[in-house]
Length: 623
Image 1 (tube, rainbow, N blue to C red):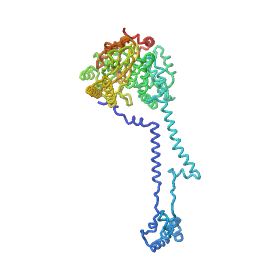
Image 2: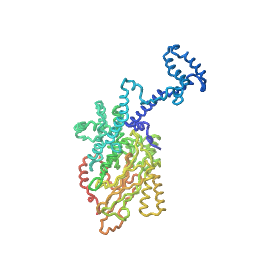
Image 3: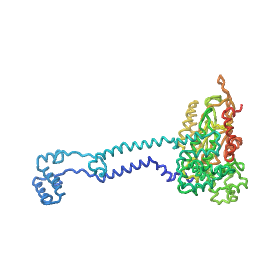
Image 4: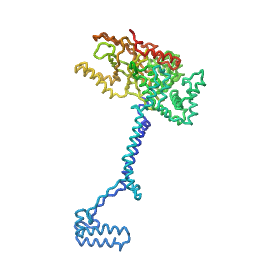
């Protein structure tokens, strides 16, 4: 079962085509076609001078026949017999010259050599411009010169300047460079997930959205509908509201429109706000990707990114794509993600969840662990769903991904890891769905644009808030994975001195894994000081809620010796458990602090102090 948005809509294709450069190119092609048609319709074939045809004779006619034909045509076209000016012109230019070419020796010699009784005829050249440009008395030369300079010099120069000025403002991901500067400056290690929205809306793309006077009243109505999602202090609600509206108008408008998506209140927007609303959602995935890169950007002194804001960016991305309020992620009923994963399913609401809670189905994992018949009975008998509605839920559950790991960390060519070694994280990330599809688009009926699902793989230390390795993983492009994975496997096996048979077997195995939904991931980092480090490997979806996976990984680093001897195994991996049980493998208090920030803003200062105090990796190691 494919999502309803598996293929790009015609509107998406038109919007991709309708760029300034494409429209300019199309306009130039239209002009060229019109000019070609004008030249073809107004051109005349070159007439060949044929004296025998003009006199109505066949080739080889005698002198008497030529004289008789001339007398006959003279009676018809001679000026004395026919006063018509055109007849006079035809008699002089054609009949007389044809008679001379066949009777006068000099004229006949010119006709035989050059094809005309008057001798050699010069070839006339001109510029293919419309006639109205050349009908200006005495200025045709100036018009031609201006046309050549304008079309051949000025127009290409203007287009080049426009392209260079536009491209210099954007990155390769079509995000303004001013946005990257703002994100880099505003990104902090203690940035709580509930505060990521404040950074996200400060993109330069959103600051350029016009704020109209007519937007005031619709935004006021929208504010009333989404006020509970704005993190306002209810004890000082009047002061908080006044403070909110004193912000930059573009920031106010952007945040309210984003909240309209999260709360599914976009139907109340005016037509002009609907256009701005779609523009905000269209660029949101690109901006969130750049914001994620800023969160995991390696920074001195240890070259680590920040885990806490990275989790917040992914959670915001999930909520925007699935149109789920951030407040729904509050931990409740034993679930660290609250009721948010349920709200991405069709026909679900908070009233339905209250009915399900009576049957002790309190977490999304509990709901997914039920077999199909148990879920159908629960939805039809308890929640009051019809059979078709229950089938809709089942289809979406079959589309939801499940991620498993097979990851190892090691120093290539060595048995153990010592201080200062280049440690390689290598392994496979495998995607499974109940409908057995690998490449599929997420089910997101509330998001009006094409969206491909991506995953962020993070090797991090939750205690110190450090991200050691980050990598974006996509399962959409199988052809690229079929080229890259066997190449890496072949090179590593050749470096290890494998036999040709082993090399062939390893490459075949890699190809089979890719076709079955696995992707090879490789990352490297510098081994820290001596000690044992309790790391966590996260795989976070940017489109689905409740599909994030994590696995504990213990890294043991030995002290570097003078002799350089090595011994023992340094990496102890906690096996990842499928179908959402991975949450129980890592200590609850390590990950819960990162996922329950939407109602605990008072703890931001405490988290900030902890993050700053644990910047050094030595605070996190176990001797």
